[in-house]
Image (cartoon, rainbow, N blue to C red; front, side, top):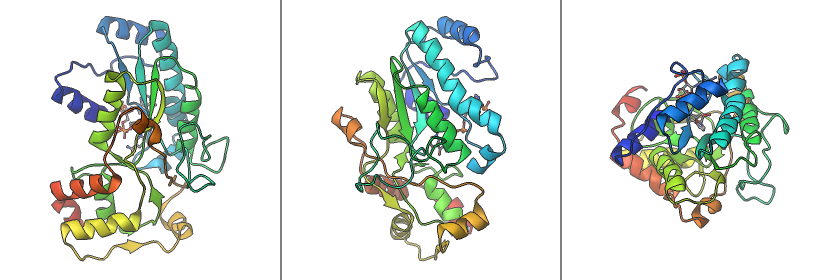
Length: 285
Ligand SMILES: NC(=O)c1ccc[n+]([C@@H]2O[C@H](COP(=O)([O-])OP(=O)(O)OC[C@H]3O[C@@H](n4cnc5c(N)ncnc54)[C@H](OP(=O)(O)O)[C@@H]3O)[C@@H](O)[C@H]2O)c1
């Protein structure tokens, strides 16, 4: 995510400085404060977080890193940014929810997480992301941007579309998802357009199922290769995962109501498929 923000800022001719934990002890309030003051920054974007490699199952093992990166760090940044009166944004996640609301609609920003330590079961990763939002409740001058399952036209191991082409078997699930470039632009627009601070679901409007996306892949890339699916979530859990995954639908009206519009999820996926070079992922099977 940090690289995606850097590329977007470069494209817009905006100055930025990247700070990583190898440069500064970001858990030290005084070190962070000094670094912010010497930078002259007018806005801070936190892209740091512990996501687990190769996937969130690793967070079940690396619990202290997961807690520190996802729950403690946002709290420290809040304190320092409030002391310095520095506006900022936290890259959060929609993975604190599972499914849809009971009324069948997508989750709104103020719906309490239902895939969290307070509403188990959840993965350790999602539990810490929900805690990270909890420590930011009521934060001054702070955006909380919820990202979900990033994708774009660039073939690669972190791209959702590439993953669908590369995995041996797929899990059928319904999700709201985020076009990476549109996510970053929307976040930067929150600051540039001076919209009210707070939590925003930053996903493309609508929701997709895995089989819908597979169908669009077959149509747009004109391939008839079969895609295999797990018979059920239980068989996925037995053979491919250690911890449950969040699959959820988010409501995006709050962002649209402040004038920030992402393209519909189908259009964003089809355009990404049409403009990308997918030969590496297609060749991997
Ligand atoms: N990618 C997704 O699918 C996705 C979806 C929703 C939300 N998010 C959120 O987006 C943010 C960025 O994710 P990403 O995909 O860009 O992850 P990433 O490629 O793994 O990058 C994470 C960054 O956070 C730093 N970091 C990791 N653990 C840390 C810790 N304990 N303390 C401080 N810094 C730490 C890493 O620093 P080093 O380089 O020093 O290791 C790295 O620079 C995370 O908050 C993640 O939860 C991601």
